[in-house]
Image 1 (tube, rainbow, N blue to C red):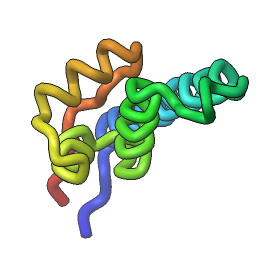
Image 2: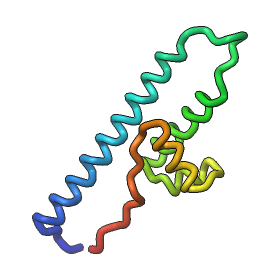
Image 3: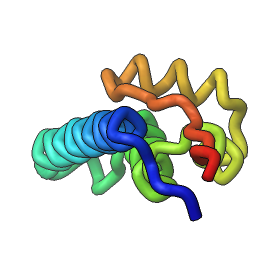
Length: 101
């Protein structure tokens, strides 16, 4: 196992910091949605768009922001998922490749 250089460690730290911030934004967004729709709905029915949004944000969070993996699990195309995330104001991170060792 090789040691990482200072620049490699800094790059990895920056990448992880950005990923954590993105996840924090997504969770805050979901929490705001929960609060917004915590009021009773008509006959107990939740709007379909809210269900879709919650499913998408939950799927992306469940795979740590890996949009291609989330799209596959949701059964939708990556382009569709990226478009929906942009529509929801949630940043998507590009797929991360492992650093060579």
